[in-house]
Image (cartoon, rainbow, N blue to C red; front, side, top):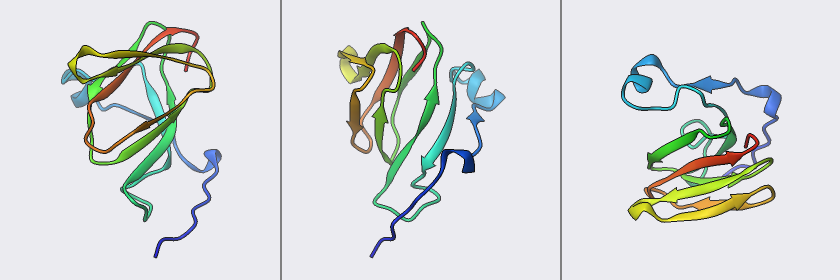
Length: 112
């Protein structure tokens, strides 16, 4: 049986890609905080966090074992899916991404 998790945004550190990941193609201009991290918190393989991504930048297509939930606080852009499919996203949208599904983001106006 799982446990209820409460995590305050002030209790986690901002992270960025390592130099090695940037050399492999990761965006050096994004940073994130995990609020719920499947690798650290006992849960059903779910991650949630805060992502800072500057305007006209993107989070390249990728996938991982964890499910993710995105909530767009500010800005607008597109969610990138496998097969070059794009869907618009904007402030107030929530997005559920199942585990192992290819996805990415492209920001068009204001930071998300």
